[in-house]
Image 1: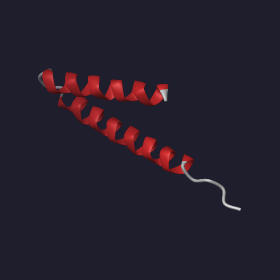
Image 2: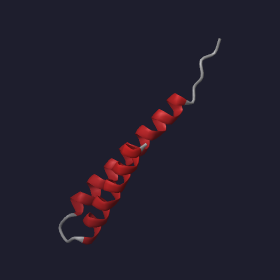
Image 3: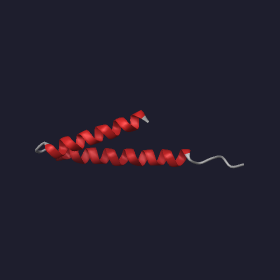
Image 4: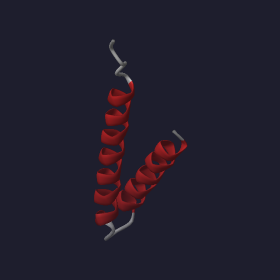
Length: 55
């Protein structure tokens, strides 16, 4: 959970820097990609952990 939050914070910071700094639009793109991948990974883990063993 801590790693998930840390990656989201890094993605947001990269996005802010990329949006504000002139010529660093690529940081905004990298931040958005990291955010999407992190949310997809969290969703995958959440779905996987929600399954229970049926007998």
